[in-house]
Amino acid sequence: MLQPLLQQANFLALTLANPLFMAAEQGVIADHTQVEIWDSGVLVFTPLTAEPTSDIVLSSGIHGNETAPIELCNQLIRAILQQHLLLRQRVMFIFGNPMAMINGTRFVTENLNRLFNGEHANPNVLTNGERARAAKLESYMQQFFTATGRKRFHYDLHTAIRGSRHERFAVCPYRPGKPHLKQQIAFLSAAGIEAFLMHHEPTTTFSYASSANYQAEAFTVELGKVMPFGQNDLTRLAALRAMLMALLAETATPTPDFAADKQVLYRVCRSITKNFADFAFTFDKDLPNFTQFAQGEVLAHENGQAIVAEQEGEAIVFPNAQIPIGQRAALCVVADPGIPLA
Ligand SMILES: [Zn+2]
Image (cartoon, rainbow, N blue to C red; front, side, top):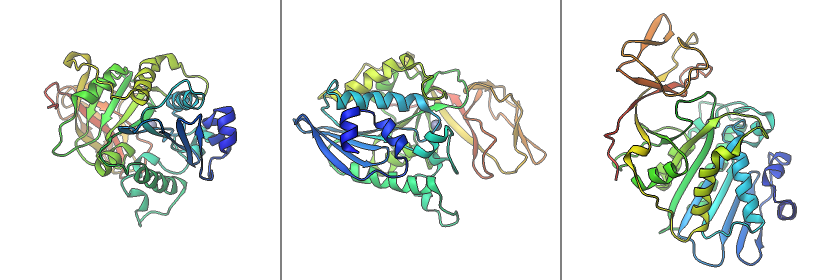
């Protein structure tokens, strides 16, 4: 696949044509950049002219129908292959779930972004395409993050099922004993991210696994609403593209100034778990993310019981009742400008 990749510079098309397997191959672009295909949807570039100081993972398509970041990453890959973007840092691009991308669905059998940090190997669950893919992606992360002394970044790029009061926002994985970094918030804020959710517990998401296992600065980044391939307005992601290009092409990590009033910080106060099959939210399915509720307002019902907002201004993010019993049906967050940052 290396020859068609170098000729056509369209890794997305190659991935969709070969969703289950691509043989490992490597080559060099004009003596300055090594290119390695690791698998279907997994591509690594290493600059050869100078020692990189950062190892960067840009993943998209972990949910197959979240096409805007897939198209953005394919543009960045094309720019590298066609030598419009000269890399100074090492980067791995991942299109997470090629079979779901072909289907135009969030997943085929199971939500891939609940299977990381070892959950894919849960012996109580039969394996499936997503579990096998999660295991492979974890092994690629392990192979990629081997150098010591380099900075590690992982931006896992998504779009949301529903609208949002903040068009673009980031989920910051739980990091016990480590404050969130102003520098990363300033970087993402300059990339157009308006709000940040600080998670309160370990999860099985891709970004949590990178943060916990490789100490990467890792984020789940939500970039607007789900649209089919070809229907995204990528100009809405121009600021993100510019910051990612700077991160990849500059010798020093970009460090925009931090301004406390440029973004809203939220603390995750709890997650609501679906415990019974009749779990249902009280609100409309189009309710935007970050909609706030009054204390005591009923959010959902299950098994004859009401689930209510526990505090004034509690806001709901990622509500989804169409999930298996035992999984997270929503996150509850509260705005908290006092979250400590370092
Ligand atoms: Zn997603």
